[in-house]
Structure formats: C-alpha cells, structure tokens
Amino acid sequence: MNICETRRKILLAAKNEFANRGYNGARMSSIATLAEVNQALLHYHYKSKENLYLQVFEKFIGEKKSSIVMSASEEIKNWFVTPEIELYANLYLHIHAHLLFVDDELERLISKAIIDKSNEIKNIARNYFIPHMETMKRIIEKGRKEGVFETTCPELLILNIFTFSSDVLQAEFILSGGEWQEKIYTDKESKILNHIIETTFKSLRPADGKLDIPELDGEQMTYINSVLDKIKKERFKCE
Image 1: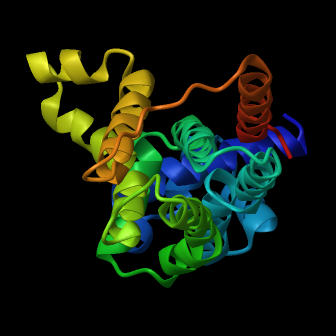
Image 2: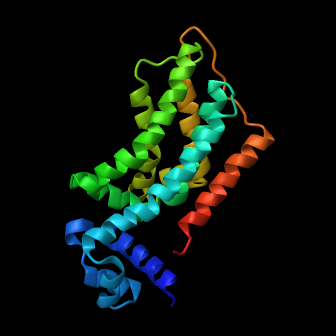
C-alpha cells in the first residue's frame, strides 16, 4: 500500500471513529486498527489526534471543495442572468455538492462537534459555510431590489437552506424500516434538491406577485455538472 492510499485509509478510519465516539472518546489505537496500520505510522502521518481531527474536516468539508464551489458561484455570477436563474443555479450546485461529500458518518461527526461546542466546527463554519451563505444572501438581496423576491429575514431562509439537507440525512436512521423511509429516502438526492428549490422560491414569492421556478439551459447545466464531477473526483482523490 503506497503513502497516498495509506493516508486515505487513515482519514476514512478516523472519520468513522470520530463519528462514533466524538473527539474526546476517539482513540488513535482504534483508528490505527480500522485503517490496518500500526500506531507509529499513524502518528508519523498525522502527529496527533487533534491534527488528525482537523484533517478529517479539511478533507471532507474544507478548502478544496469550498474553493471549487465558490469559483463556480463566481462564474455563475458572470453569466449576468436574472436573480431567479442565478439563485436556482447556486441551489442546484450547493445542494448537490453537499450531498456528494457528506455521508452519515460526517453528519454524526458534525453533530457531535456542535454538541461539544468544538472550536474546530466554528472555524469550519466561519471559513467555509458562511462565505457560501453570503453568496446566497447577495443573490436574494439583488432580487429584493429588483422586486422579484420578497422576504423579511433572508438570513433565516438561507440558514434553513443550508441545514435542511443535513437534518434529512440525520433523520434517516430514525425513520429506517418504515413507510416514511421509503417515501423520503428513495432517490433522496432529487427529493431533497426539489424540496429546497420549491420551498425557497415559494418563500421568496412577493405577496402580490408571481415567481416561477426557472430552468437552466443546456450549456448552463453542462457547466454545473462539470463542476460537480470535479468535486466528486476531489472526494475520492488520493493525496
């Protein structure tokens, strides 16, 4: 097994261990066992439990994924389209990107970090989540100025956009084995995306006006899907 593959296996094992036991309960010895490496090699690559914890967040949430999405959002801005189309394109991009990277283990890891009031999760939010939320706010404020969007508190609407998919993923275990699981989690990516788009546009519809959900043209969809392919490769990239 080469160095690249070793590091990848360690990160996946660490994600599992931190998700199941939290930071304080996680053991480097358990991570080494899950990764099928000796503990000396684990410390050689990641030095300490704290550094490994940070690297798990960085790999599965951090800068590389975030920079790809932010660059794509800037490109979409330069399409010079209506606020409706820019919002739709960003919703499609952000929700799919989130679902590509975040799995059950990562959701549980994040939940434990929030419960523990971890500084690491606050830093992740400040560095990676809030810039994406600001992008959405800029688009919605533009639409408000043009009279096509109406909302009293765009911040709450945006927070709901960014937390809804995580809430749905975390609820899957609770609903497992019943009718609700089948109805919600069959083709869950499309259902989550369509629900967020539908409720967002309904929430932004002016009281005395009309707001239709737009469609992207073929070239626009091809661009966004190429970005998502890039993100998918980044997730499984060995480094």
